[in-house]
Image (cartoon, rainbow, N blue to C red):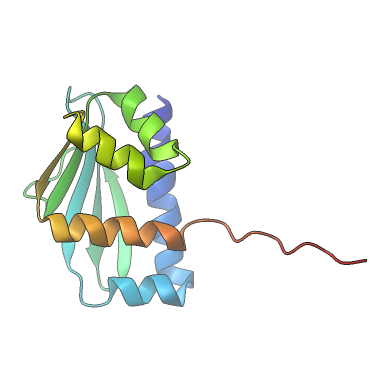
Length: 128
């Protein structure tokens, strides 16, 4: 359930950023594609549609996604996406065959680059 909620929240964050964050919007410029995050056991799937510099999130499996990232199961997907060092967690998961990538790997790297625009900005420490 946590992984399903995480994917839903990711979709909401990307949708909002596509409307309000100019740097995020620049990354979407010229992209017209669908991608999917799912579990390999088929229990959880969510796809994301990028069109007109906007992102929409929909539940379920996408037909012909540009790329898909499949996690061994929901618990592993949640742990990987919540890891402190996400890049290392992804690389380890791919190496151990707990994560499978299908489709255009360059777009996977593009997607991972988008994530930095979704992180909340850290508050600057107040000086007294």
